[in-house]
Length: 268
Image (tube, rainbow, N blue to C red; front, side, top):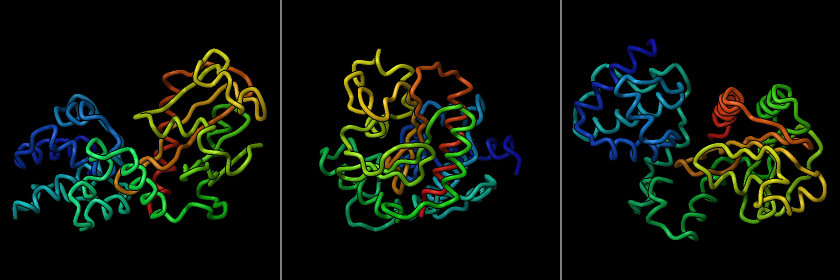
C-alpha cells in the first residue's frame, strides 16, 4: 500500500474509532511509538508524512482500538506499512500484568515514581536479551555507516544498565562498561529526541566530565535514544569525536534514520 493511501485510511480509521487525539497518542506511545502528539496529529490531518515504522505502530494502535469495539478496522490492516512491526513492543503493551499502569508502558511513566519507572525500564532492557551479549554484524554495520557518514572517530550502540553502560556495538577506541552516571548516553536516554553537543568545553553539563578532561577526550557528541519494549528508552545510537563540529538539519535526519535501523534490531 502506498504512503498516501495508508495515511488516508489511518485518518479515516482514527475518526471512526472516536478516539480523542490525546487518547490515540497515549495508545500509540504505549506500543512503542516515538513521535510527539503534534506530529501524529499533523500526519492524520494530511499535513506531513511520518517514517514507515511509526505508520506501522499507528496501524497496530488503530487495529487494537477497533478490536475493543468488536468492529473491523476499515481497510487498514496492521502490517500495511511495508516494515516489520516492533513486535516486542506490541507484546509488552498487550501483556496482562494485572497493573494498568504497566500496560501503558513508558506512556504511564508520569504516574510512577523515579524508582518504579527505572524498574520498568530495566525490565524492558532485559527483555531484549542484548545486555552483555556478544558483538553482532547487524548492529556493527549500522555503527560503521554512522562513523563513515559523520566522519567521526567512534560510533556506538550503547545500552544503559542499572549502574553501567554496555556497548553492544562499538566502532572506534572506547572502553566497555563505563560507570553509567559519567556517560553522555545516560543523559540522552532522558531526552525525547537527539542530544547534540557540538563542543563539550562550552557546555556546562559536560566540560568537567572525566570523559572530556581525560580519555577519550570527547569534544563532540550526538546521540539518539533507542526504545525497547513498552516504549522505554533503553539505550542510544551515538557518534563521538575529539574535535568540535557543527550539526546540520540533514545530520539530524541521517542520525534519526540510522537510529530507526538500530531500533528495528533492538526489539526481541
